[in-house]
Image (cartoon, rainbow, N blue to C red; front, top):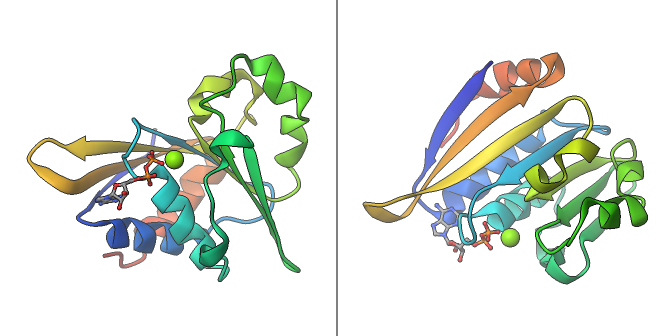
Length: 159
Ligand SMILES: Nc1ncnc2c1ncn2[C@@H]1O[C@H](COP(=O)(O)OP(=O)(O)O)[C@@H](O)[C@H]1O
Ligand SMILES: [Mg+2]
């Protein structure tokens, strides 16, 4: 299983990392963002959106489950499934139909694991006990498609 670990030293770093990743994802791709509250999952999405100049429009989807960013070229769907009481709620909103229609970034996606596409990218966020602004981001490919994404992403100079 291919894995890539990056250390972010600030919220800006996190946004730069996700902006860099955005280049390698396209329609039909899904990334699960996992990690405790305050680890930077939403910041990561903000950076990702900045690749498409959509960063000013971000709002947390905590109360709506999904925020949709529709552009001429691509749709980006930002989910936060933390508050779903049950996976059936995800199916009820037609959650699975989003996967093919754009790029899906799913905070707490591990909670809806059985509904996820067969292949996806998982990004785990962890705090560093010693430095309050440090975050360890671990990228793990589930499926060949994302192993290739990680190979290309790894080759790029990051922060
Ligand atoms: N390295 C970092 N990466 C991301 N966020 C950071 C970092 N250092 C500090 N922060 C702060 O941590 C908070 C992360 O919040 P948020 O992105 O909403 O987390 P989550 O969505 O995981 O709950 C923000 O207030 C952000 O400014
Ligand atoms: Mg969040």
